[in-house]
Image 1 (spheres, one colour):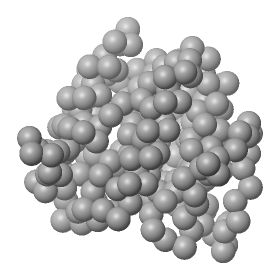
Image 2 (image 1 turned 45 degrees about the vertical axis):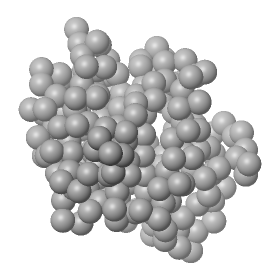
Image 3 (image 1 turned 180 degrees about the vertical axis):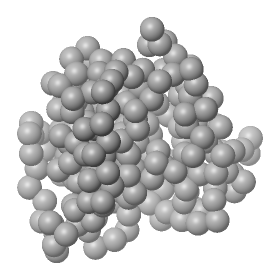
Length: 221
């Protein structure tokens, strides 16, 4: 209920906003240099987001024969992704775009509200739709994890909001990659996580690939 409709920006107070949104600046600097060297910016899929994308070591093999450009990094949140938008999300030529990000609410002092998070998703997606009209945009559901078990209800609410939004937004598709992470008894699997109980191992990524790849292959030219 605290959600408001804003088009281009959202005022968020943080303890040290500049330090927080530039904490992954080395990754952004690397992508800036890569973009200068990248002569062909066409791709089947532009992957954006945080470590759940960035730590998928086999993503290029898993998604083959799709051609990928990946511009994910560390603990990216929507706030710094908007700050770094020109580097990570502008100037490419994708057939479709995928986003995964869950770090705007992590049970930390820098957390924002559910409403603010939902607004930031919509601001980010609206900017993408402006820059890439007609390009399908796939937003992945926030995943459950044992490390962030206390946020399970929050994640479910955000996922519900995103799913409802995608139902009415043109060229936006909500992809549920959370439900496949539970066993037949409805218990979150433990064998799909790395030792930190937050990030996926290859078994977990295999579940995501099975859910996501068939959707992306539809846009392969």
